[in-house]
Length: 428
Image 1 (cartoon, helix red, strand yellow):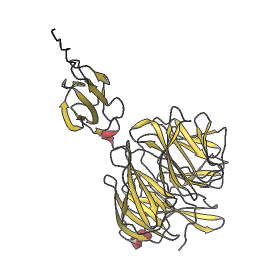
Image 2 (tube, one colour):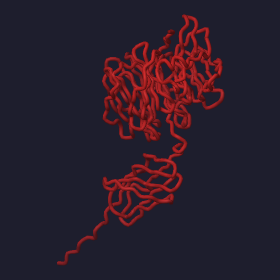
Image 3 (cartoon, rainbow, N blue to C red):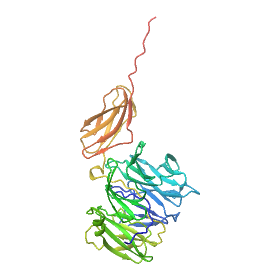
Image 4 (cartoon, rainbow, N blue to C red):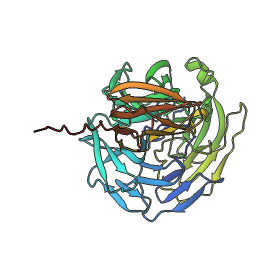
């Protein structure tokens, strides 16, 4: 059997509802997918790096790019460097429920994995949030279903550790019963399936419960996980080497496969290419699969139909020196694309003054809050709600409207001050 020999890294694939990955940093170019066809612009400070990462805001505006052991902001200011240490699989991901911060993961050989927080408005402000063992050098990120929380999975000593990144930081890690030495991973766009590469020749398909962070093994197969799921999740694409000068782009039906044999029997040859791909196929915001051949970028147009020819077309992006970057997308189902919000109009009010919550979304609403630490909730059909004028500390923890739940992060705490007792007059 022919085997792929593409270089790999652990890259998640997240579906396309917002625009965190609409810019790809490819060494000497930024490729923007907010137009059709995508457009490229040359960067001021090019990098020739195998491992790279970039992130945009939710409107598709580039925030940061990483390459060559350096981190650059939108103005091409170098805001981070790690001279003399080799860094693997750098990852820039959104900070859950906070549009003003970005999480930056990187690893240093012999020291460990670092998670730092970058201020989007003041990029020079970088603080370390958490460090991990030097053995945690392979990691992936998967969005928790219908939230902005992110599952953090890492391979440690033939085990998988998983924890949840929330607005409050990391949960305590759990050890999943996955006794494999994971070397690569591929995640479906709906986050329901993961393929782990094991060693150099085997892969294992898992079902993933992205709401509760539970992995369930499906079956093993003799293909290395240097592949990409199609947009629908029905197929996986792989590159197989013919000789040093050519390769095949192939497709397998992962949706209908029940074991290794049914998967391998579904093999479909898309195209033989007179060159060798240097990268794993990667799905882009336009939902096409991209491969890199030499210094050129090729698109395999959406091939989710059973007998599509899927002719790869060369995009006029030449002199591409970097491999595909790590990118991340939030994937919300339609009901949560416009989440509700709630905020207090004041951080403190005196006893007797109204404490108002302003709501945005589709009524009716349910406001979940704590009063002096005690959990409470209230329902309303209005976009403004007046709290009972009882002294104490209030904190909004969640708001629901007709479509979905959301955890706000701005102006969510307030206090009603106690009534001032009149001075006691002592008669002489």
